[in-house]
Amino acid sequence: MPNRHQQASAAPEQAVEEARETFKSFLAEKGLRVTAQRLAIFDAAFAHGDHFTAEELLEQARAIDRSVSRATIYRTLPILTESQLVREIDVGRDYKFYLATRGKRIEQAQVVDVESDKIYEIDAPFLEWYARSIAEKVGLEAISQRLQVQARPIRTEKTEES
Amino acid sequence: MPNRHQQASAAPEQAVEEARETFKSFLAEKGLRVTAQRLAIFDAAFAHGDHFTAEELLEQARAIDRSVSRATIYRTLPILTESQLVREIDVGRDYKFYLATRGKRIEQAQVVDVESDKIYEIDAPFLEWYARSIAEKVGLEAISQRLQVQARPIRTEKTEES
DNA sequence: TTGGTTGCAAACAATTTGCATCTAA
DNA sequence: TTAGATGCAAATTGTTTGCAACCAA
Image (cartoon, rainbow over all chains, first blue to last red):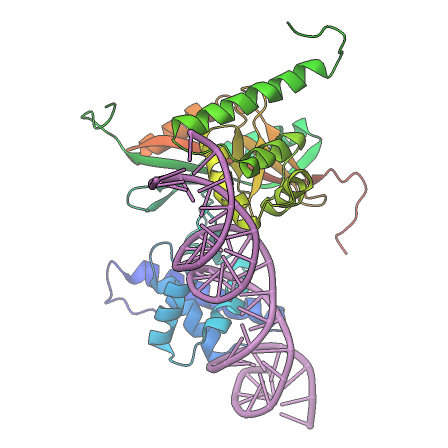
């Protein structure tokens, strides 16, 4: 029985618990083993609320299980990605970002603030349709799409134009 | 006076000649030198009709001037990109593609055929507007955007679903 | 028992950089 | 003349891989 004394944070925690079970099932289905390292990496990924890099994930996973190595991080990330529990995001930097997919939202666009380097995930419903119609133009069937917008804080004062 | 004996290929050749002059002017304006290597790289880029990689450019530039080194290719590419004569295209591969910008078309979307690895450049006029409206959602001003569609040949027969 | 997993360190691959030598202007 | 440009080779950096020791099932 779920403890009913917990408040606001109860729902998200339960969602993570659910995702954790999904991960274990996924491993089992694929004939992969449920190891302490893989669970530590999962936990680290879901403890993080925002985009993270492989390096950041390593650091956080190690805080949970000191035995986690960089190699295992890189070997586990594709599994998490394939399981749909984590999404891989490539915004043209020289390293990739990852993000735990909480809920079922399918964001399809990223706005990258070039000044703060922050990445915002934006819902873009009809982008999928748009991508499909663009692929059709060259006689292909769209599989996936991504829209990335480089942006910066709005300038109100004039700062350039010498 | 333009020679009127040349036919179909006359226009494109002249356009390249024009672009070549633009490149030299650009170098001069920036206080950069017009070297044999830079011109060989320019020529190699414009001799190529499609997307090319740094490595392919090196090979082709060397066919024009054997002294061109890989380092100079990588040092010249940003200059060509800044001059707008060449566009850099990152479709998430581990190397970048480049493309000579003939004419003034501003393609903004790429369709990547995952089976042939071919990249198609597609005009996407209102994408710019769309990107701007998306950036506004998080209070930012859009600088640029890119839409990439992964696609594959349309399957008419069933090939999967075991 | 045993085949999947792991950590470690070496390997990779695209790109960048330090430096002594050239060369365009 | 001289500051910018070049080739070479070494360095960088995120990621991958070979291998012997481990361990989940």
